[in-house]
Length: 170
Length: 170
Image (cartoon, rainbow over the protein chains, first blue to last red):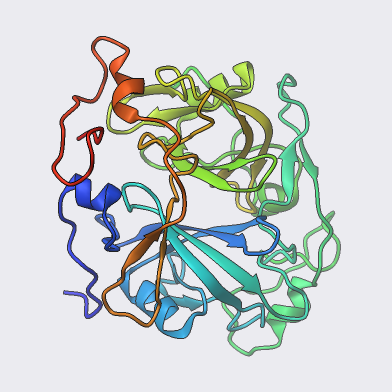
C-alpha cells in the first residue's frame, strides 16, 4: 500500500460536485496531469503523477511527476534547472485528471527536454492534406546536449543525429 | 486492423523533430487529447481519441473523441449542441498526446457535461491543508438535466440527488 493516501473516492455526486479532492489513480497508480503556464495559458506539457508525486508537489509546490520510462519520481527541472513552481492545482469533473498552473523557472524558461518552452511546438499545417505535415511554431530556447550533459550519469545518452543539427539527443 | 491509418511511427528523431504527424495510439488504441479554448487558452477538457475519431476530427474539423464509457465515437456536442470547432491541432514532442485549440460553439459555450465551460471548474484551496478542499471557480452555464433530457434514449439517466440542487445527473 502506498504511504501517500488521498481521500477515498466516494459517490459520483461528491466527486463531481463536492469540495474534497478525491483523485482517481488508475490501475497503474497514475493520474494524467496537464501543465499550463499560469500567465499565458500555454499548455507546457503532459505527464503522469502517482500518489507520491502528487504529495511531493503539494508539499514543495514544485511540479513533481512520475517518470514512466525511468520508473521513478521526477522532480521537474532537477537536472535542467527548469523548475515549475505550482501556483494552482485543479481537477476535472470526475477527478481523474489534474491541471497544474505553473510559473516556469530556469534561465531558459523551457519545459520540453528538446529545448522548447512547451512540448507542443508543432501544429498540423493543413487538415485537408493527407500528408499530415507538421509546422514548427516555436524556437528552441536551450541546447539539450549542453543542459543535460552537465550531470554525470544522466538519464539520456547524447548522440548526434544527421539532419537534426548538433544537439539532438536520442 | 483499423480502417483509419496514420503514418507509421519511425525514428525518435523523426517523431520528435520531424514534420510528419505520427501519432502514438496506446495498446488500447487510444491517444490522450487536451482541448483548449483557442481564444482564452482555458483548458476545457481532457479525453481520448482513437484513429477513427482523429480521422473524423480532421475531416469534419469538429472535435470527435472516443467515449471509453460508451465504447463509441463521441462527436462532442452532438447531444448538447456544444460543438467544438477545431482551429488548430498540435502534438507533443514524442507524439503521444494531442492538443486541440477549439472554438466552443452552442448557446451555453460549455464543454463540461455538468454545465460548466471547462471541466476544470474546481481548484485546490490550500496546499498546506490536509483536508484538500476544493473551491469552485466558475458558474454553471447550463442545466444538464434540461440539455441532455431533450433526446430520447440519452446515455445518462436523470436522477435527483439530495444536496446538489435539482439538476444533477448520475
